[in-house]
Image 1 (cartoon, protein in one colour):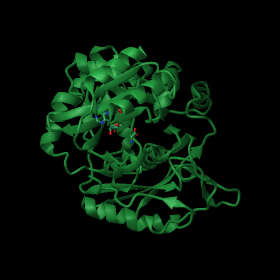
Image 2 (image 1 turned 45 degrees about the vertical axis):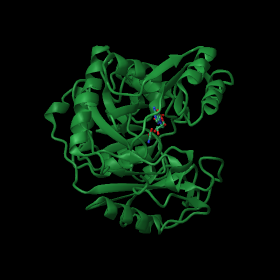
Image 3 (image 1 turned 135 degrees about the vertical axis):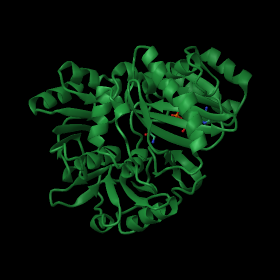
Image 4 (image 1 turned 180 degrees about the vertical axis):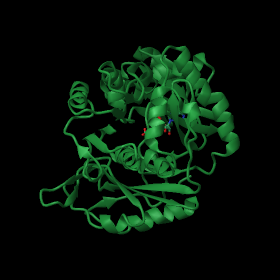
Length: 419
Ligand code: AMP
Ligand code: GLY
């Protein structure tokens, strides 16, 4: 089969890597891909958000199956467009991807189907929103409704901070149209856990739990980033918690989407908070998380292509999905200054040595004309290792990353230990 993977970050490198192990897959293309992906796939110069261009390329190059990984093309209807041309594609249709693309939709869905989440209200009028903040007090959470690159959420510790967030979203349009509508919700407490699940519209199979590290610096300090590292599974996500989540959150969500006429096929991302009152949903995403994907797929022991196909065909219940025992850790090596401004084009050394004991997934890298791999983004690499237990996985990831160098390299030293 010829598979096209859409996207070009660390998550897509992990997906391409997992698919490259499938005996059913004999050719992989990736659009746009990156310098690491290029070792396993043909990189295609089509932007991930170019729906028309992607469909045309897939048709012209006899692609058998497309895996759409990022949120934007899913929300734009890339799966719908591919399927309309008879090209099978993995990922939710636009009508189901809205579970991530609109927080107002997902909050209303949870309210209607009694899925536990923070109390909330949605506002389109700024004065009403400001009055609500005043009435509720702090801490309180303010969210822009649309996709805002994970930056449209303010956990405000004071009423003034919350009001400032409302004003910047609704009056100053800090997140553009994403902030025309805001969701204001109760501030929850407790450890955060991600559970990714394969879905075929009706059935759902959760993957091992995982945890992202969103803040830039050690001790969960500093600005939010796309994710500085991940572990899987998460020790506090016990089998008892998993059972409660399956019964009160996971299956009810899949059933709700089907009942609403937008069955979810693809990877559903449950961002959970294990609060003193039980697990609650912080957010849904309509795709694999990055960098959770890198850790979780490192533990997969079943052919990923079989799973993607079963999700597409609605036969997930007939597949036995297996996972390695033990744990995985993905350590992100970022450019100095990230998530603020940073330099690009720094030569990277030690990749081969690191690759002997870990898998080095590329995110922001490029290849120079002389063949040198250089930095080309904020998050550069995700050094991912597995071990018999979490401590060994963490140690292995740090040991492998120790071989890698580039100027101003920045990383957290507490991945897996930041509770
Ligand atoms: P989101 O984009 O909705 O996942 O929010 C980003 C981050 O903000 C989450 O990972 C949480 O750490 C935090 N957050 C969001 N909603 C809440 C809430 N209701 N209570 C506490 N923290 C929250
Ligand atoms: N790791 C969080 C996300 O992908 O949204």
